[in-house]
Length: 70
Image 1: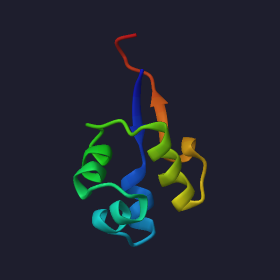
Image 2: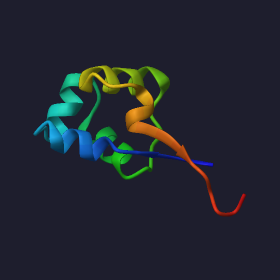
Image 3: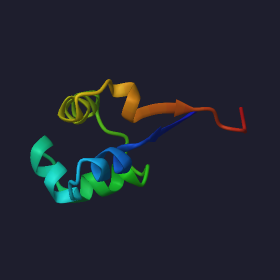
Image 4: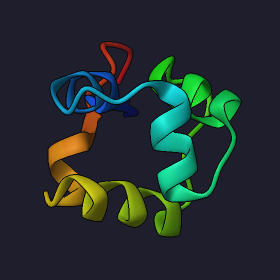
């Protein structure tokens, strides 16, 4: 299984830049870039901060997807 996310979609729908979101959740812009590119899996705490910012469940933004290799 792999983790995917809809962070870029939520961020765009709220008219936030990567820097805006980074400032609001207390991380660097590079962290937001890496999460959106699926190169970095956020900690549970950070995932919760992000989901609370958008007032949605963690699973609405971050989710597992099945790998075809399984």
